[in-house]
Image 1: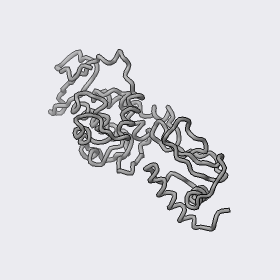
Image 2: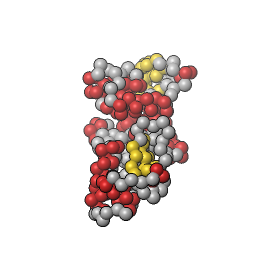
Image 3: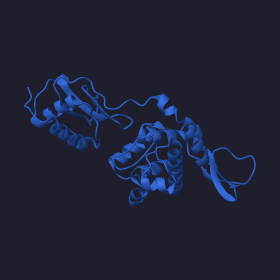
Length: 263
């Protein structure tokens, strides 16, 4: 039997501990489950192995809670919870959910000369294809735009998929230009900021989160060998009296263009 304690107090304790352990908040739902976990943590009550709750990050960076440990994972933390059922705090990202944004990804990838696979991988890792995602640091939407970046790229509603992806891909293009089309450095800057990349001699900063982020996206968006020598063409068009720049991996059949990159 657990001592009689305030459910509110235990829920607060659990929330604090989960924040410290995972950097996330509001991960658990249900007063009863929260009280049981909080009591086990607060009073050190022993429980059978079948009642252990394990936490880890899945391939998409989402927090997972389960009574079954992740084989070979060094990042597992366990909490003793008597009579705990299987629990998963986040849903797996389905292919259908990601495909809902294929058209938007295709349009803005083509306009900015960025690989669609790279954009899709960034979106999956950043927000798990959730257009209403909001990080503890204030990043918003599908591409997790920081407020300053959203303002810079004229975003009025960061939760609008079209606006968010337009700005996110344009910013990624800016970073690719800054680091001479080095995707690893551009991704590191997208995660940790250009200042961190420059501070460490234009290399991936030695931050675990950033290095895991870069490695994960590179794995998800691996470029086929036959694509590695493709050229990126810069085309300038005049629309309403203003020069508009776009990038494409297809050689223009008419008009003036420049070869921006050969990769």
